[in-house]
Structure formats: C-alpha cells, structure tokens
Image 1 (cartoon, rainbow, N blue to C red):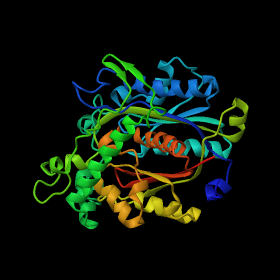
Image 2: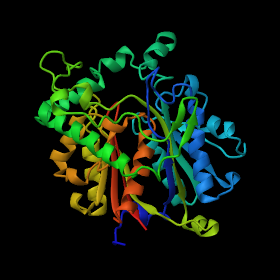
Image 3: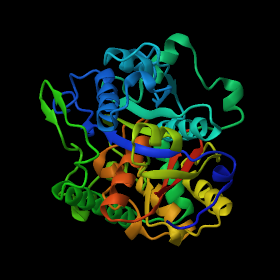
Image 4: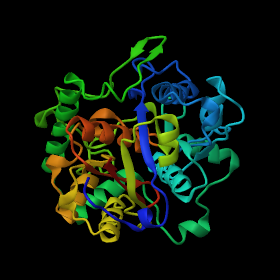
Length: 397
C-alpha cells in the first residue's frame, strides 16, 4: 500500500470502509419505472439488510445511521433514515439522522460517518442515501413553498440572481468553451461504458437484487446502449431554446434508488472479523458561486490534492458525478485529468442520478471497481445545487 498521508489521517483513527451496496437504479417513470410501486423506505431498508447480512454484524451494534436525501418530505419525510430502519424490523435503540446537502447529501453522510469513527466517538456507522424522484419529484419543493413560504425570500434574491441547474450547466459550457459535440461524445461514451459494465457483470457485487411488484430489480434501467452522436444531435436545448448547448442527453436522469456504506474503526473490524477494504484518506466540502453553482468538483479536488500532496495522476480511478456533461468536461480541463480513468463504468447520464443517493452509490461503484481491477487509490467528487462541492479520497487496504 502506498504511503499516503493527510491531516485527516494524522488527527484521528482510521475510518475503514468494510462494505458498500446499492439497489439497481430505477427510472422515475409512472409506467415503466421498476420502483413505481415501491416505497423509498423499502429501497433504503434493503441496503441496511444487505450490509448486515454481508458483514454478520448484529443490528443492535450499529451506533448511528446517517442518510442523505434532498427532498425529506412526503414519503421521504419524518427522518427516512430512521423510518427505513424501523420498517425493516431493526432495534429501536439505534439512532438515525437524515441530512440534505443537495446532490452531495450521501457523500456528506460518508464524511460525517468517517468523522465520527476517526474521532473515536463511534466504531460502527452506516452512511447512506435514498431518493425516489417519481414519488417525490424534483420540483416538489415548489409546491411545498406555495403553502409554507419561499426558501429564497426577496432579501436573498437581492444578493443572488439564482438560476436553474440547467442554465448553470450552460454557463459552465460557456466559460470553458465546451462544445455540444464534445458533450455528445461524452454522453455516448457514458452509455457505452455502463452497458459494457452491465454485460460483464461489473455491478453484480454492489447491487442488492430487490423484488418488486413488477419483477426483480437487478440492473440499472436508464442505460441506452443504442445512444448515438447522430441521435443526440437531434435533441432540443430546453434550458436555452436559442443558442443553447445542453440537451437532455447531456443531463443526469431522474431516477429512484438507495445505497449504503458501512464505516468501521480498526478495532471494530478486528472484533467482528471484518476484512477492511478501504480507508478514507481525506475528505472535504467547498462552497462556490451559487449562480454557476456546479463547479464544486474543481476546487474540492484541488483542495484534496493540496492537503495530501498527491497529483491528479496518482489516482487509479475517479468518479465525478455526471450531473451534466459540461461539469465533467470543465473539471477535466482544469485538473488535466485522464477521462480514461474517470467514470469507467459510466455515469449518471447513463445510470441515472437519484440525487440524494448518488454519493454512496459512487462509493460502492468505486470500491468494487478498484477491487476488480486490483488498483488502490480512488477519488469521488460531486457538484451540488446551491454552489457546493464534495470530495473524498479512498485507498484500498
């Protein structure tokens, strides 16, 4: 194992990743979505069960549960992290909390879990994420604010002329001079990689197969292997009808899913006979301009490199969430990163992006791919609505 150091490692105990799992990602479609009649509690609960069964840890020994979700109301309200645990029949003595850092929610759940373990407060923490974007649509907050008020009062709007994420993606394409054809190429490659990964069974170990009223959910629904540059070139640019570049093909898909990671101390791993699979080397969250908003992976990655002394070339694999194609391509231009090592099994344009869940899905995918290819050092980084960026480095042990 390479000798990598960071302030995170120096200031606390190791935070070890001992298991990671996820559901398949379902389409948020009223007629075709595999999870259309499945409550999000069931999705998340299946991940809890899979973690416990794979590790053999008694449910009552889990010390805390931290789950990301960007729309914690309706079916996802009243602390879904706790509700899913109780519905699965697990001990009421185990606490849980639901957090919202927009698209980075589940990645932040891992960060908080790792911090609790590294500080010595806890030895076993589940971090996860869940989002059912069909049952609780991404536009639901607009309906809620009609009843309970606008989260952006005029005083805040006087400071920032907020725009939607689609326009932010367009602004990124403008600033970094990213062409529509380059984004078309990246989208086609995302689907090609995701299809190949599925055909080769690369996701099998990370996915918990969940029975639904419409059959078993065993593979991701959003992958379209017939995606072509010619087909993408025909799509409209909904965010800028005139002179726009971003299309639906360059955007992450609305999706349903859940995922979870078990973080443990070295002492807990020894006590329960767990095989540590990776350790958290360093982690960070940054804020960026809330208008262009989706540039967070750039300073988050730079901060991690500065803190650890690593270079972008030191990473064997990188997961950069494909919220939009322009986000990944701007990050690649700024960091001079190798896209051959980035999202090697496809990304959110093909697999889907259940927004509050994706962070731990990326951890599951990265961990299993590092193991499959016998590589060591990985990076996860995401952009988040409102102008945030998350980043984590993991190292196989």
